[in-house]
Image 1 (tube, rainbow, N blue to C red):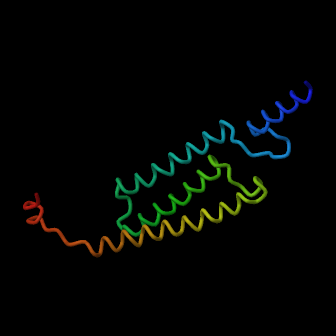
Image 2 (image 1 turned 180 degrees about the horizontal axis):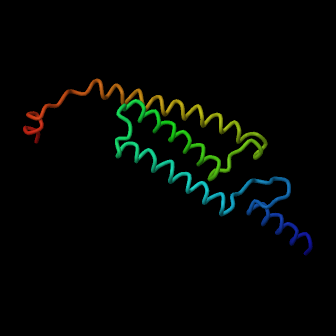
Image 3 (image 1 turned 180 degrees about the vertical axis):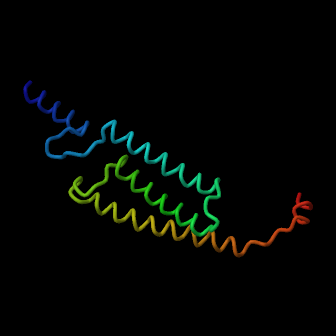
Length: 133
């Protein structure tokens, strides 16, 4: 019966991730709240930049929004996904590098698509808008 209890305890520890050999960094309530507050700020500031028409240059506004988006992705990865160079034997660092590559592709691709859509859209006059269905 002792082996059954030991086996059951090992299965319980493995199921709940409380094994001694693998210490995953789970967040505390303080770290989750810090991540949440940073996420709200990193969402509210770009919204304010656009709605308040803070900068006269659209290029500056777009660049700042992209910077805030990149910072927010890092905040999510650190505070909610617990990705750092110490956990998972370095595999998390590889995932972080991969995420940055995807981030660059997504941001530059989005800017490229929006730029070309803006250039290639047919100009619309007020007369055309009145005749629209």
